[in-house]
Image (cartoon, rainbow, N blue to C red):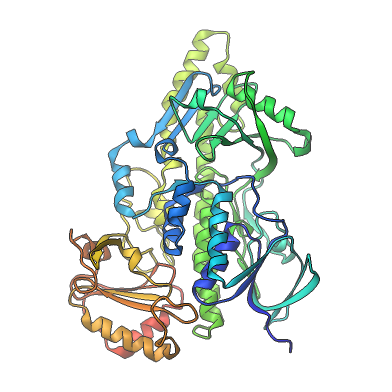
Amino acid sequence: MKDIDVPVVVIGAGPVGLATALVLGRHGVRSVVCEQFGGINPHPRAHVVNTRSMELFRAWGIADAVRADAVDPAQAGTILWKQTLAGESLGRIDFAEGPRGPILERAYASAEQLASCAQDRVQRHLLDAVLAQGAAAVHYDTTVREVADHGDVVDVTVEGAGGRQTLRTRYVVAADGAAGGMRDRLGIAMDGAPVLGHQLNIYFHADLSPWTRQDPALLVWLINSVSPGVLIGMDGARRWTFQRSFDPAVESPQDYPPERCARIIRDAVGTTELDVDVRSVGSWAMTARTAGTYRSGRVLLAGDAAHQFPPTGGLGMNSGLADADNLGWKLAAVLSGRASETLLDSYERERRPVAVDNARHSMLNAMKMAEVGIGPGTDAVAARLESPDPEVAAAERRRIAEAVPLQRPHFDALNQEIGYVYGAARWAGGAGGATSPAVDRTPTAVRGARLPHAWVERGGERVSTHDLLVPGFTLIAGPGGAAWADAFAAAFEELFPESSARPVGACGGMAQRTVVIGRDATSPDGRCLELLGIGSGGALLVRPDGHIAWHSAEGSTPVAALTDLLRGAERPAR
């Protein structure tokens, strides 16, 4: 039998494909990433980097770089509704001026805050991290022609600058996007709503400061009869996208040359004097669908290949990044022989319910946006706003102004970002992922949940509990938990003796760390033990993806029992 060329082949070098390669590399697993296009697509699409994704970026060492490329938070926290950019305001949401409750919730819930950073910039930072890590080879202009799963290995035939060749691998991760084709070739059907509509996305450069200087905003929803749509500031200055409805049955992106697009932008702004540099035009289908299964033999789906949501809520790319984090460590555990292949089945069991709920949440947001004239009813709303009868126009403006504040949960859904619990039919802060501001969304330390954030001091430095974690397993114990630390070290040595000689966090082995609160880190405000729910003598075990594998409020356990728990941590929470 031909030797394995590389343990994992990743199809697609978008954010999810690159994140998968990065997570694999953190565990010492080599990969090859194949991307059919010539490089990072300069056309920015997604831009919301939510709280959980920023936490992942913090762990991966790129959070500062992403923040540096993000829109100024003061601008990113404002959403406007207007007739044209130069026209009158119809309503606004300003998160800095909103209720203090949600603001404080976010401040207490994480060391990171959501950001708005254009997808091409996010990809650049992920690519830089992957290349610096040195565990993955990224091949652009390389198309996957065939994937042959032989049961124990997979042959991936690719075609690139060097001609056609076949890579033999253990596993394939299809992160080739909604239109990549691998899912369809595998015969995996999608469940969910039909196509809700189509959007044209115009990427352009222009100086809109004459209209945005006094009232900067991240999103400006424009409701008019000539050029309705939404303006999205990709850098807060000159980079913008404009999205509008599009009917592929009667037109194509090729029907939108730069001159026509520039005219559309000027109409949306409400001026005839504007220098518009149109960079590219694309289209996409708005849908809410989830793959019926995330796995076909040794091929696994991730990101948009596994799920597609309306952009209302900004959950698409973010869900894919969490897919990569969940799948990467499990592939590494199986490839190293530390876990059986059945561990990979937990990937779908854990991530698919999150995708289904994110699709539901995004759909509800899209439907609710109809209240403020966004969607199929835009023409009717615009007609009333532009009515020659001043009373009709005034009544419509009042109606929209009253409906706009009700859209706040669309843009502020902390529970969707960090509240999901693997293996549970509920979210950590409430039932079913509810996003009502009245729901208690305080992160909870339960099995399957993400480790709650609290500030602690370690070595004279203020760090998050998330900063205590390593790419492997981390045991966090209360002040009286020294016995837990000794038992964990002994259990880890029994299970993974080959890792004991490697430094904590090293690639190529299963890293481990024990942290005793009061010895290795202190909690000046006392919130840490309360949030972690472990008490003085308790402890919890955190998986490589930052989710809790096991939790005990008090007591101790012999090495044999903890060994079983550690082995069980590589099985899904139930």
